[in-house]
Length: 332
Image 1: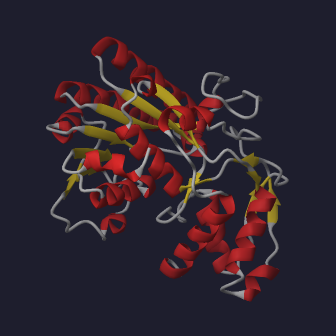
Image 2 (image 1 turned 90 degrees about the vertical axis):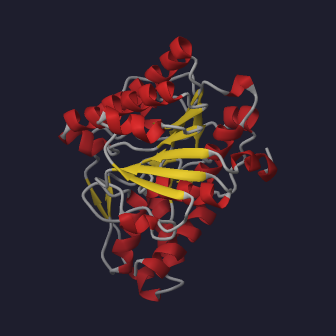
């Protein structure tokens, strides 16, 4: 699929839930750049207003401050929309273990509210953020979409339930859905602060402060770290693909390569030390493994390549270099 095929998004009405978050705000910016009229729905529980600074005054951008747990708000947000990109969720395995009830309310009840609202509004396609956590205790590598294991956390359960609900809404109500199982997304605008900050921005900020990051375990756990621009590409392809066989499917959204945590910190030190040579001398510490974490994660992206024409443009090193440059120039 070429960039020309994204042109069909010009002048369409797109709702991005969680649009003030890391992934959502990047999607909002890209969609506006393609000529879409974008509405963001966010309650700012994990998203940030500063993520919208570049677009808040764009005449084609509308902000609705509201919660997906409120069905009426979801209905209002979906009115006259052509497409929905559903990014709103409470992420983090540790957060779900600490507070499973709220994770379920947002990720399951909120998701169902959005499906009902999209169905009632006649939305053409509902593309949603699924999760690699759905693979659970499956030890097979690489992960392929039709082989999952037993979920290892409340968060993983909620994201699997999303997939089940989306499938039912297609079969029962003919709502086109596509689920994107995100694998450890990172990049510009990802929040480095808070108890549940993702590992890459957290480590970057610690290195920049000359602090020692703490790796959970011995550092051999590995992940398919996926740069934000690869994720944006997947969302755009999911929105615009015309092949009927490509719709009502689940896709891994990843690079198809894995990096362990020791290697990750080495890359970060290398790229950051280009700005500050002292960072190269900082030692990394180790702590206990986190409950609910899977040891290894590696995606097969063959299905996305075949049915969506996906072609990841940013391998781990190139993505990390871009991310480090952004953090150094924006958050130092």
